[in-house]
Length: 177
View 1: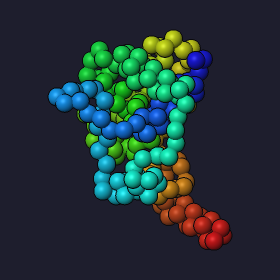
View 2 (view 1 turned 60 degrees about the vertical axis):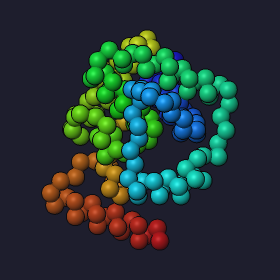
View 3 (view 1 turned 180 degrees about the horizontal axis):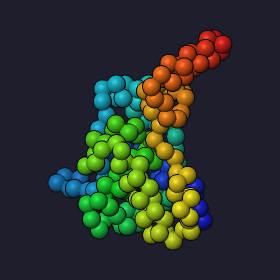
């Protein structure tokens, strides 16, 4: 691995493979993996996207090895302290594709600190993996966008500008229809 993008792709691939794994829980076993809590609406949406909550994708041996590497070796970098564990939770749930609201249920800090912890956790992971990166690479990590409406214009919108942006957005939708 030579870049942040490769690490992010491996995390996302591991999360996809993890989603397809059957749910098995050992009796009286505890892990630092966060249990993903979904609302009823999110469960219904998941069932609509997949068949009975399971994907129809079968993964190759190489993809399963990537999942095994991420879930057994990479997680070791985050076992030092509670803060590191929370950073891993943010990284893993972000790779899983969870919404910010879902991630916030699993961590002890607020939304304003979420991106900073994600960035610090990625820096720690990259150092652990000995991947070269710059401060600019960390600043260019994907930021959390508003998730109210799909395809909502990204960016910071405040005050009366909200009305103008919504009018433009609705006009674009009408043109498409």
